[in-house]
Each structure stands twice: as C-alpha cells, then as structure tokens.
Image (cartoon, rainbow, N blue to C red):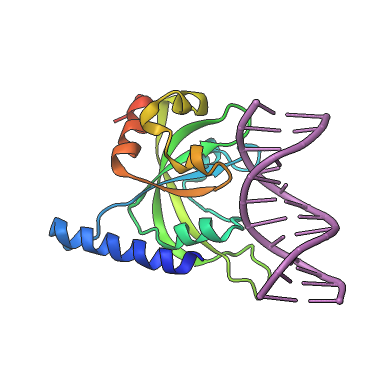
Length: 163
DNA sequence: GCCAACGTTGGC
DNA sequence: GCCAACGTTGGC
C-alpha cells in the first residue's frame, strides 16, 4: 500500500524543491514520539545524540527513511503528561537499526537535541487548536514518526515559547 | 491469499 | 482499567 504513495510524496517533494530553485533540498519537519520512561528528551540532552531505535511500524520506518541531515524533529512524550517537549535535529540519515534481529531490515536515524521548549505543548492544547486538528498526531494517533508541514511545525514551536 | 487470533497502542 | 482500532502473525 505505502510504497506507491511514498514515491508520489517523494516526487512531490522533489518538484517543490525545484520550484524553490534551491540546490539543497529543503529542510523537512517531523514529529517523533517517545515514552520518557524509555528515553526522554532530557536523556537526549544528556547523551548529546542517539540513534532513534526500536521503531517497528512500516509507515513510521518509511518516514524515517525520508529524513535527511538537518531536518528538524519535534520530540513528543507519549506517557505521563502527553506533550511536545523539545526540538531535535537529524544528524545522520537512515542506517540499519543496531537493535534489529538478524535478517530484519529495520532502520534508525541519529538525532541530536536542538532546543528544549520553554513551555511543553500539551496534546490537549493541540486538540483545542482548530488549525492543528488535521495533523497526524491527532488524526493517526498511533503513528510514532510523522511528517509536519513547516507552518504547523512553526506554530507548535511558537506555542512552546521558542523561536 | 484470506482471515481468525493475538498483541499493542491510545481514547475515554 | 476497559475496550476499540490497528497491525502482525500464522493456520488453512
């Protein structure tokens, strides 16, 4: 199901890059969920970087495959207070997940912390904002890695008190 | 290749 | 904490 749709999306992105007339691909924007008990944004700040392992859903994996170095990623804590807590940046494009069992084809990307949000953006806040009701976090609540359009990303960052 | 059974996630 | 939704696995 997903592969053809992914190819279409990829082509659309390439075309939009050409339209922008930039040689470098545009920065893409994403959101990734984590359970803070497993790995929190604070852990990422402490470590300096990490490989984002353990993603075991094909749609989420496809999204990670499309990430490029420099892409910006909102980090969302999915248990405890459900909220976006910080911004990370992709520091290495996809490569095999070191935690995968032999024969499995899962991949990871590396991310590093960019900025902690001054005020975490709660899921309830997002759901109370009409502009944000269509984002995958709300519409496709089980997806753990998802793309965000730049205006949405910017709006969320602004809600978090960072610029 | 279909579908029942099962496991996991998230809404309420 | 229950259950619906979704995804995966395995039997046929």
